[in-house]
Length: 394
Image (spheres, rainbow, N blue to C red):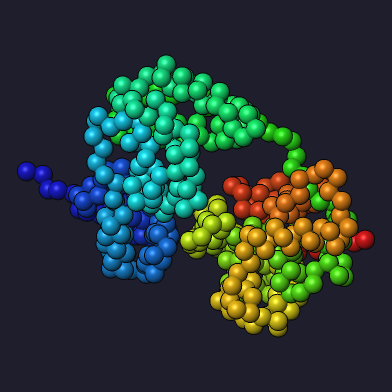
């Protein structure tokens, strides 16, 4: 009788002091989870196991492997799906973090779904699919014609002001959600035929370059009398000179600043920033990045601390509260008004600051991959250093 494989395997690389980790099904985890951990680095361990990411010996690596197995077992909460499950029942699993099959798979890769993503899935299902006849079909019996009829019904549905849903970003997002759920269903059912496999996904409508502020308009934002205190000046500088998102700005901690290089290390952001029940989590790209820590922003941070005191997070008022989305929108339009900036029909919102910075860098012939990395978009190129972006000269 053959000997059963070990629950896990850690071996030391000959050319480096690292221990690749491989999990076997004998550890008690599903095979789909074990496949995600074949010769993986301990650097990929979840954040709660960060203390085990750099084992110095095989004994320490063994302890880290056992901790990972225990963690993954505690997060394998997805219920067993019966073969007669309906489309509605299957889609509903994706509306909660605890039951989503995709979330469980991403946990094994240390890339868990964000709360914002799960909230989007819940709204797509509840508002557009839950009451449709497609939800009552069995997953194993839904065919290509059923899927095509769903696309047609959703496309003809009227949104606000009688606008058809087809051709909107909402339509694109809902269909992508349903396609994703059906693809996930087929990952563990090899003989099952996906009714969406021969239907092309909807193509998003691109409206050209996003509305931005010009270099001169950005300079006017920092003119005297526009930004009245350290909070306003610091937030505006973080938006237009560092390219940070709102949820990343209010999640910035003092240890994320390097005054000498100078640079900012962006590690976290607030999930569900626009709603109650905010939760501190990873950035949108689920990886940390570096951003320029301009002198204007440095001075603003020092002034902010003089006015409100130093706290756990950099951008906080005297009482410890963070700038809310309402504060953001209200003050942003005040800045435009004080600076005498006429939008001229342009849709200028707080997020336009990131597009404005990207346009400025592109006009200065900065490589596109550098800009992607700076803004936290997916890119394979990592620049060697970051330069501070000051407002252009008058």
